[in-house]
Amino acid sequence: MSTRILATSALVGPALADLGTRFPDLRIAPFRSPEWTAALPDAEALVVLLSEPLAEADLAAAPRLRAIGTYSVGVNHLPLAACQTRGITVVNTPGVLTDATADLALALLLAVTRRVAEGEALVRSGAWTGWAPDQLLGPGLAGKACGILGSGPIGRAFARRVWALGMTPRFWDRDGSGGSVDFGPDRAPRLALPDLLPQSAVLSLHCPLTEQTRGLLDRPALERLPAGAVVINTARGGILDESAAMALLGSGHLGGVGLDVYAGEPAVDPRWFGTPRTVLLPHLGSATVETREAMAKLLCDGLAAALAAPR
Ligand code: DGY
Image (cartoon, rainbow, N blue to C red; front, side, top):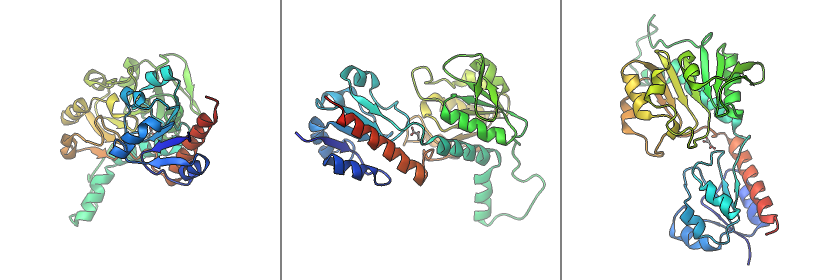
């Protein structure tokens, strides 16, 4: 029987088509479409997006499955334990989206603090009447501390960026407190969350969504941030309690929030739409041409290796 690779969409660049040349029985069918469901029993490899959660039942419906490739670094949408039990290789895309995601987190931070969206809307509305001493002021960043949740490649890349702005990075990660993290030009302390939060004028999330990090930034945690703190989330929605963040923006405790990810995405809590001092993006962390091409290549190379391995 020939190898069947079942993908839910085309990827950026030539990698998926090249994989189809090497393993000719490649199908592209929309996620959970009748065609996708019908092809599942024959599939030896699946390609899914981060917005396409697979369940254990999907694995049960795919007895020939040997590999799952996700076009993302995040794997929280996959049934990892069941994959391990079945010996199904999981291929994701670490490393190649580090700079793009850190850049986007920085873009969100600058957009929130310098009120870029409000300024742009003011000019575009035709209502701008000219420069004014107190117009659209925001907090400066130089000299302030930046808490970073996650000391992996993206967290460290973000640290380099805020360090270049004159901020002092501090890390929290799942390895606990103590010691320091080398982020390239400098080292920064690794702190326990209760110690990190009160110091963080800016808090940026760069950790995966796991059982340990789900709901990590709940209301009590957010209340430990200093008044006026800015929260940036380019990691996963489930880490931040969005209702608590909204409430604390409303009370003035938080100074701003920048989001690229949402708990129920693509659904966005409509209360965000009317919430001032927020910038909302549609999960653009890895959205550069070069990055998406590199992700596709890494993913397809990983799948090819998994499929070429002896059964
Ligand atoms: C990923 O690939 O998991 C990121 O969320 C992209 O932004």
